[in-house]
Image (tube, rainbow, N blue to C red; front, side, top):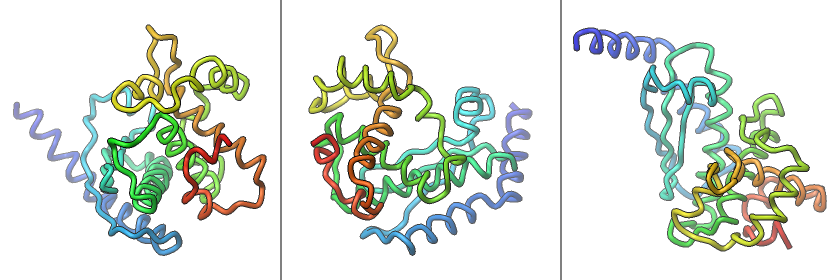
Length: 216
């Protein structure tokens, strides 16, 4: 018990020293200044469980999500070498905040297609704002060839599914033959294919575009 308390105290000290709360706040303020949203910035910061090997190995030590009320939550490993990953994740999550607030999105009405486009747009926002080197691991879950095959064979038939079942298509399910992070990767490619057909569209226009326009 004492060892656990000592470990947590050490992590708290490291988090304060690294000033990640201030870093997140300033990054979000800069993003909102350049790409205004109609809701205020709200976020929470948590220390990542040091035993969470999945997030440490697969996600570079940073986990995050944005609620449907546009509030962002970050779980961060208090280490200096995650700053680049954190910047990428902040940018990704800000785009969720921006699109959710701009389109007044809510959880109950979201289809699988909405989720695919939401995630795909967020990674393209990272690419446009920061460059390819900042892209998260999701895109590479599928090759472009695999994404096209999966789109034709499976996803096209479920685009308007709603609710918890869409998690299977986003995160993957081995029993159902759905690849790990398949939906995140496919979302990236859906936006990529749209951009190839509409080269001059801005990120502001993309952000406000209804999901069905990406497959029209």
